[in-house]
Image (tube, rainbow, N blue to C red; front, top):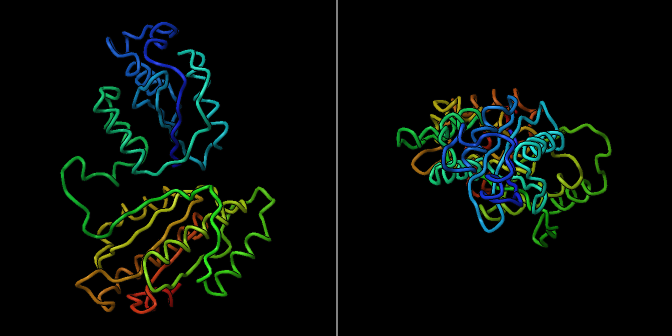
Length: 305
């Protein structure tokens, strides 16, 4: 799934006065809640939209869609046709911006707090976030890994002088060989070894940016799986859902062992990741990172790919 935010040039009073439906059939008091519920009931499968905050002459909203079934532009036009024809919303403040799963889930919770989304639990399941954010329901925490997310910035990032020759050479190669076809795929995956986490994060960001600008990534979302424990295979459904949900994006797997474990403990974890990587090798770009002074289970994992 791909997740986006958008700012609508409207407000609750305008929606109340110009809606082509009887809003009280969907929410007796709140026009934005009524709009959310109407769209939820009438939108097609694989697409979700809701508003989560009202500001001065603006309503903040998010939407998501299954990118393997529908392209971005046709999905956005479809949503806007509903907003325009039913609620007379015809303008946005700017083009939609891609956001992370965490951002989208925070918007669900904010919409819930403002009583804009009475059916929020159904929305969580509909947008494939139920298995990832299950701890909001029962209060438990995932102990098998840590998930971080970021969006590749559009502002051009310059190469750092401390990059090695191989890194600089690959960045130059990507820039000089832009993808001019409709094919979006990953012919190669990457291994990054650095002496620190910040250095690895910096290289991942500039690498992803160059690939996105060269039309080799469908999504600008980066999923980072780190702090992995040896029994990570117990979280099989959630790990696979993260990868599956990041079609056309970048999935980073940090091969450092978690504090308190050693690399010899990661045999089953390595086999688990090997299975997932082979299954999704054409689904997203994989980047493997490790500390060059403390390679963790990198040698055991990378040798089998």
